[in-house]
Length: 282
Image (tube, rainbow, N blue to C red; front, side, top):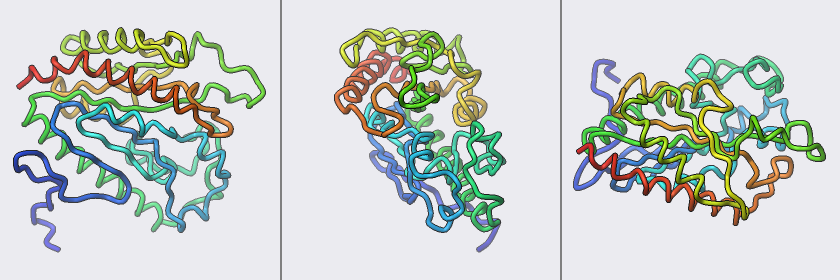
């Protein structure tokens, strides 16, 4: 292949954006609009050739993934759910940390039996490269079409790490929804973030009002939103939504679908409340 040739595009534009290069590691659905919702840690799939090197058991691996966050991306016009496990390739980390065998990079959890074969590492890093190449083209096309983009980077987090029979972590440092908005342009998008938080609080789940706060658990939103803001500036409002796993039992992986649907409805209402700000960019 000629290294100087232009890369094959991921998308084409007719009356609407069309995906021309699907990928086995993620699902991408394109509708019309400037709202993108992603669940890049939802997946559990792993290549068999890589899985044989795992030291962590199946429940332990699933506990550190973000199961069912893919159900919340339905609020977006553009919806991305990553199928591959974050342990196969972590798309919310820079390339050099996207597949690490050092427990210090995985909350002290020993994920791998030892060093990984170079071929396995190369295969995973190729997916990281494809993802960011695809996102670059997608964001450029959406910005050209809409003027600006709201990207909701949806995650979940554990709050019962000490064990299934132990009390949950204190609520003070563990809101029901932690809205990460550390790297966005506050002067441009502060009102949109405040409105998102306000509407999320207005919509109960599990029969109660939700504790929704900004920037409680994390100093930054991860590599993905940081990259978006560094690359596109105020053309993108990337917000990380960290849902506490009160919609499921994080030790058994059993979910309360009614609560999850409450969360989806609340997020849909929040998106509707700010949608006009992003349509106004055109």
